[in-house]
Amino acid sequence: MIVISWTCARSSSETTNVRRWPPVVLAGGFYTWYFQTIFQRFIGIDHISWLEQALTLVPGVGLTAGIIVAGHSLGRTHWHAGNSAKHRTRPRWSIFLSGLGAWITRATLPVMLIASIRL
Image (cartoon, rainbow, N blue to C red; front, side, top):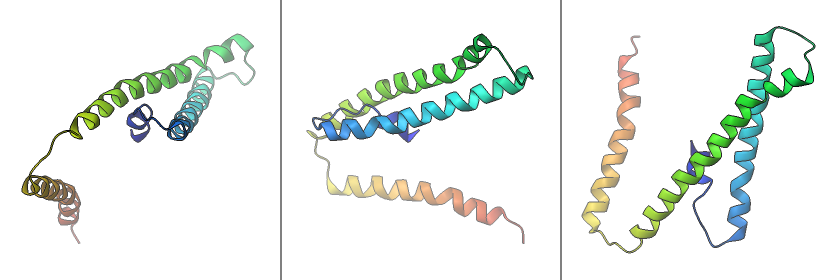
């Protein structure tokens, strides 16, 4: 999901825009190849026509388009939230407590998993 939220956060630098698209293209290429292979195996024929091969590309291409659309939607929201947060100030104790709460939340699951293991 990092790819999704990372694809479209707006920036003035062109180099950061260039770095955002390769993960999306690689993920889209992988999904397209993977779903094409799965659907070709589902059909069960080793040699399929070019039309059937093109139809097996549709799910992967659709998923790639979904990743791009979701990235733009989430990226725009993320950019606006970060941009408006620059103009707000919070007291230090508030920042400390929110950071502490986040670390407690992160530590809870591993502690519960370790505690649930019966030796």
